Amino acid sequence: MSASPDLSADAPAEPHWPEIRAWLQANPQTLLDDRSLLEEIGLKPHGRNVVDFGRAALTRLEAAAEREADARKRIEAIARANFAAQTQTHVAALDLMEARNLSDLARRLDAVAQGRFGLAGAAVALEKPGPAPFGWKALEPGRVDALLGEHGLAWLGPHFDGLNLFAGAADEVRSVALIRMTPHFPGSEPAARAGLCAFGSTEEDGFTPTMGCELVAFIARVVERTAERWPILN
Image (cartoon, rainbow, N blue to C red; front, side, top):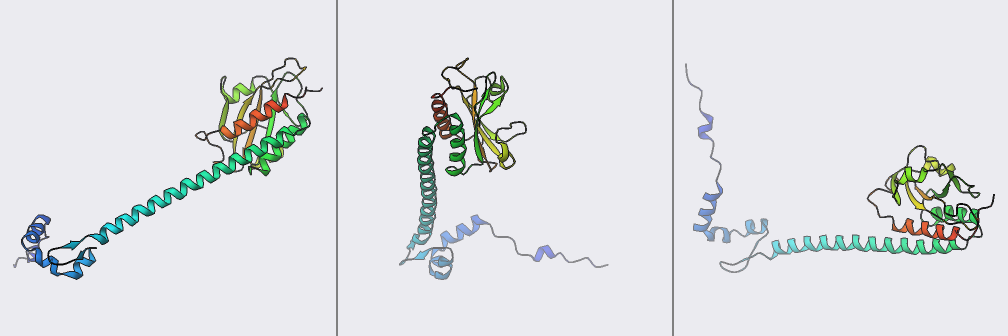
């Protein structure tokens, strides 16, 4: 019975880099004379015993320049977006300060939220006891603390059942920003009322817990101070 041939004995052994490196060190001219190989690996022969690494270096520099240009474009885009948002916020504040009464203030807030910020809507709410102006939402006592926490000033995140602040736009709202207010109404008892200024976005990531709330908080402060011009009429 004949034995099967050992095929592995005829297979060439894999080259090892230390051996290749040692051979190149002993025979450098072989590599220098092979211009096509040098060009394939991104090197350029330049005279005897000189290799120009310019192409490889230039490739790395171009890649770094592209990364820096992309980063600069992103920074510029963010800066333009922030500037536009701040401008719209200031214009919205002027619109709110031109309100003629509490009901007009609530209407203007909803209008600027939609028209200037592209949101689904905005609403203002006050806790009982005491009446809520027309166009404002009435909340049960302690509701603001339940939503924001006892000492919380704001909450940003996904919309949830039971909020009931956006009326007809509720089905479109995917995320919300809730800002605490404590307006002091002249001639009312008690003068200070716990309340909310609420903004609703049609996008799930329109308001997130990690997002800064400076601009919506500024709008809420404008609403709060403007509301203090008028008493609440029964």
